[in-house]
Length: 315
Ligand SMILES: [Zn+2]
Image (cartoon, rainbow, N blue to C red; front, side, top):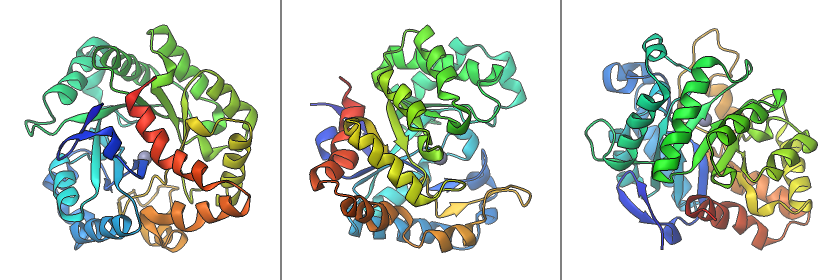
């Protein structure tokens, strides 16, 4: 039996159920919900809770909230919406791409200690503990700042055994660099998932990643740049190639997503037009497409029930 930390306390991995491995409650910036909540729009709590209740009624049991401190992580809010909706929520630690100036003076070992505290003791004095470690690199590859976080995540993992998720840039094959750093730190890559891997249809690259032992987060639906159908065909190709036990589909969805006016990301209204199902898009759209493509029901269960459990439990 393995127990992990959810925002409401410990959770047995057999009780994870249907699990979405990369979503968000809110995507904003550090401290916004705690200080300037009006920027999140009127009724934002209700929007989150209603979205989660719909997800639970549609059969979603657990959501990993992939929001780090710099994306505006708010564990008190996560606990409240989990309580009100009945969906298990898993919090994470680590850092995304908004690495502040002051961290340049902080060593990887010092950072690792912060992440370890958030796993063992809790986040910001709440007692709410993290169950996944996250590091990020994007179009620029593994920058100096990213590398420090990545090494810290590796060291915190080696001490706590908590698994690792990597925000990655699949079109640039940045996973190759990230895995090289983790390997250098002595991490067993079977405890790692490379996220946003369905932002490419390059099956050769994705197969290379899988051959290193890691999981793939096929966690952007409907996503940008690559069509949802192309994403699903790529997933089918990987299933057919025998990798169904290491694929983790999800949406990277949030009902509250604040981006700057100048950002190339679509705004929330546009996003909701393209995805009217929220956390249920996979079940409503992708799974029916996969069934039409001949994927067995047991495989669909494996993707969202068995694989998340196995990711947390380890080999
Ligand atoms: Zn995300």
